[in-house]
Image 1 (tube, rainbow, N blue to C red):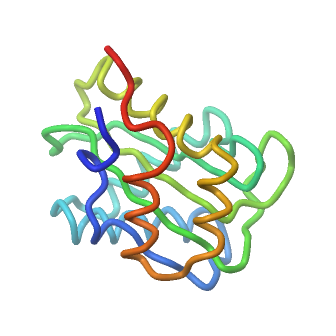
Image 2: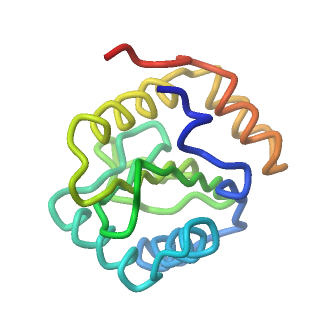
Length: 155
């Protein structure tokens, strides 16, 4: 699996800020609607429900919100870079500025876990995160994500 298989160029944006996690999830839901014709309220609620099980802020300014949804045929990704970091209840209590959201089919099994592992490994790479934080062009961010760090995750 490659990040280029789950992350489209139009699924990458830069936001100046977000006032809350809920509003951030609404922004991701609007992106999902534009990319895959999903219903924004369903996406927002699925992300909030998953977040209720435990924060998805994994530390070092990175969050990996994810959810399973009806209406998807395979795992899809969205990426947001926040110019003003957001308090995300991350494990290290650091605010988040890099957000990679994964949306999986409701029936997804191991493919969802493989995608989550791949994204996690990519965003644990310090040089990749430095490059992401140094750029504000969505096309450049997409290229960094799809051409840097781990290329794939073996089955």
